[in-house]
Image (cartoon, rainbow, N blue to C red; front, side, top):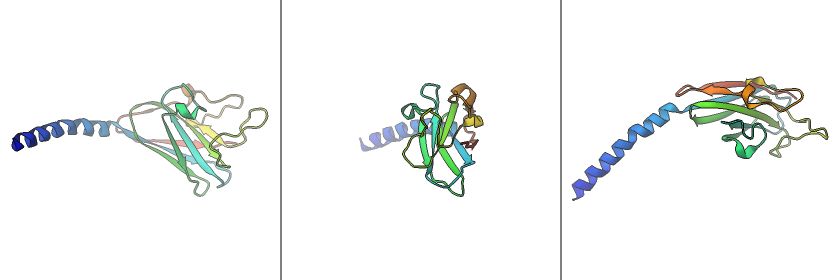
Length: 149
């Protein structure tokens, strides 16, 4: 009986290993290399979206969120284990570390930001369609993002 249980457990475990390995192979990482920061105050927040809904400001709709320290007026946000698909990133230099984009009385951001593909429209929020990029299975993606103020 013990041998039967051991054999059954071994068969069950061995049948799930290829599935786990295939999932790990398919996933990739997305690295956002942030430059153009005007100072080292605060931190950098990166939101990764996998759909247009909520992009760029609704944190609750982001697929993943990363907060990164600033080192030498630069920062990096790493999103490991990202499945293949279409994504867009919004980057915020949160100088006062309040977790949100501060705006003036006209609604214009007072902290630096940029979307992937270095999209930073003058009169509107960036759109998912113009900011999106593809993540391919097993291929690491590097996004260069230059913050503007």
